[in-house]
Length: 246
Image (tube, rainbow, N blue to C red):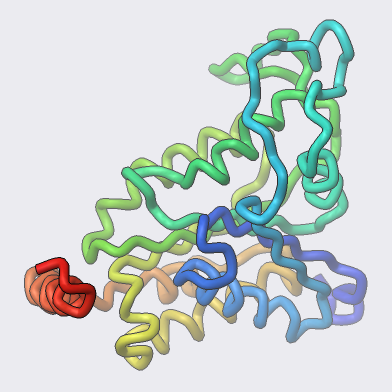
């Protein structure tokens, strides 16, 4: 995308962390958005944890009784409208029990009202056709307290399957284990965060993110997971002692 075409480009980040803007997920998201903003794009972060989003009841009124209209009158309609207006949507979530948070999953479940009930066979899969024809271009950012990258396997697969159902284009995935390092030792992830910021810039300017940038952002930085775990355990013991729990 040419530089003079970035004005008016909208990037929406949905941070599914229950801690909203106070967690490690937000630190990573805002570095990506800083890169997007450097091109002149407008950015917005929304937090489902701060919104009124009722869980899907599975009543299917939105398919048959009131097509396209959910029984719930809450913030989900506004969230979906903002997604529809965005040129790029960043989906961000910490890893909870090997998956996305309940706040983010609840949001995805409610998108059922934006699909038709009919079966559509395409390629080797069956889909529900969507009510919105404009394809979603997306990026995934996730953090995890554990130091090994294997903890992102399930959440990565889940996001990819959701995007296939949505016929969304996934520009890149960015995964950061041992996320407490963001605040305990920021220099360790400095080069990865520089690449994450570069990814935000490339996504707006080029409409894609280079393989080199994705690789650089996802480069390993935990040399000894066992040693890292011992440090964290000592911190947790100190916290318990502070609260007189041990």
